[in-house]
Image 1 (cartoon, rainbow, N blue to C red):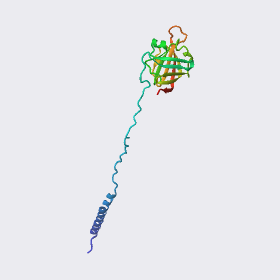
Image 2 (cartoon, rainbow, N blue to C red):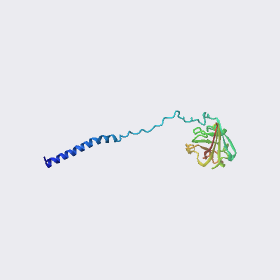
Image 3 (cartoon, helix red, strand yellow):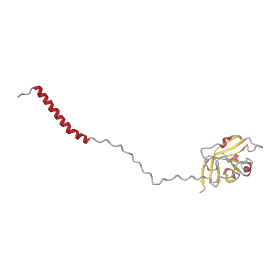
Image 4 (tube, one colour):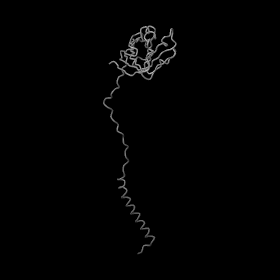
Length: 203
């Protein structure tokens, strides 16, 4: 018995579809087994903290005990004029009559910032005008020996307060009245500004 053409085409199409279904049914599980799994995000390794953390070195001030008003606490050496001058804490007349006065509102020699020393032009600083740029100023205290090098010489009005302003580094400012041979209250000030160039602290 002959199968009509339309029926034959339908059977052929059905067989083809059945074959495709069988192929897909067998291949799909294989593909699913070989599909790479989604990668888990990698966690960054964190180093374990060290057993002991080194503590910062304890800050030890240069001057554990600050000098009192009127107390002698150091010596100012000026090699250029062969001077060895005692330093007293304070700049009242009592201190200036005995030696060089340290302005109490400034840091002590060797410390970072501006340490200000003053003296009379007709006593301790009679020859200070011979000291200029490049000369050394050496301060010795209980904290050690501190060498400063003069970087600038200024002559300012007696009321100029820029002499005692803070500085970004260890600085020594030495002041006296000017002119040196003036009779009476001198109108100006002779200023030496020096940077710390060597520090030998006491153990």
